[in-house]
Length: 342
Image (tube, rainbow, N blue to C red; front, top):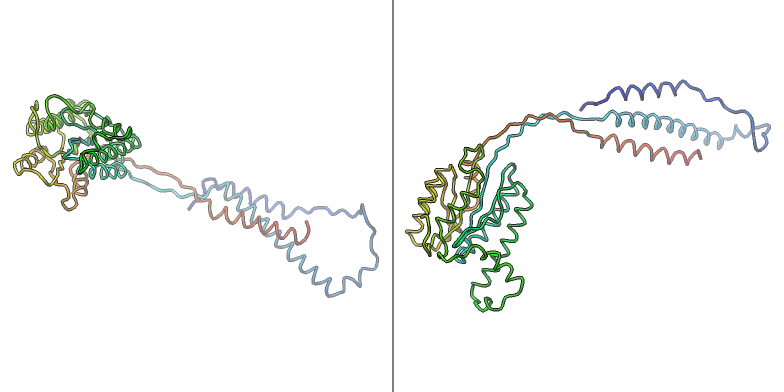
C-alpha cells in the first residue's frame, strides 16, 4: 500500500500541532444568570467529583476523536492505493457460425446455438458472425464485436428453430394453424434460404460463408474459423461439392469445425469428416461426449492468433478501511457531544 499524495498527511499533522498549542481565550463575563458564591462545599461533594471526572474523560475522548477524524480525512485525501502490473495478451479470431437450416438439422442447431452463446460470452477480442443456408445462403450477422447484438440474434434464431421443431415434428397440422408469432419465426428461417436449385446445398453454403469474412483475398493477422453444422444430405444441384468448398476454405486459410446429427449415411459422414480435416479442423457428431467442449478447446488450440501483448501498470484505490474509521469516529463524536451537551 502507498499514498498517492503523502504531503496531504503532513499538512494534516501540522494542523493538529498548531491546534494543540493554540489556547482559546475564555470569556469571563456572564450575559445571563448570576454568579454563585461559596461553591467550595458543592465542589467537595462526591457526586460533583464523579461528574467532573466523567466530563474530563469525555472531553479527552472528544479531543482524541477529533484528531483521528482530521488524520483519517487527510489520509483519504492523500488516496491510499496499490500499484499493480498487468500483462494482457490479446488473441484475436474471426469466428463464423454457419448453420444448415433444413429441418433435419434442427436439433443439432439448437444445441449448437446454446453453446455458441457460451463461446461468445467467454471470449474477448474475437469477432463473431452468423450465416444460415439451405438452398441459398443468408448472412444474419456480419462479423462484429458487438456481443449483445450477436447474443440477441442467437436468441431469435434459437426461438425460430424451436418453432421449426414444433411445426415439423410429430404434429404436422401446425403448418396450417400457425400463430402470427409462429409465422414470423418460420419466415426468419426460410426467407432467403429457399431456392429453386434444391435444398441443403452443403458445398454452396460453406463456400458462401467464406465470403462473409471481410477482405478474404488478403492476408490477415486474425485467425478465421467456421463452425459448420449440417447433415450433409444433398438435395439439389450445388455449384460446389463439400470437398471443393473445403479446398476453397483451405486456400483462404480458414479452419472449419463440423458437427452433424448421429443419423447419417456412412458415406456422408466420411465425406464430411475428410472435408473438415482437410481445412485443419475436426468433425464431431451430435451427442458425442464433450462435443461442444471439444470444439471450444480446438478453437483455443488451433485458432490462436497473438495480436498484441499489453503491459499495464495501474493504481487501485483502497479507501474503504479509512472511510469506515472516519464514519465511526464522527458517529462517536456526535454521541459524546450529546453527553456534554455541546
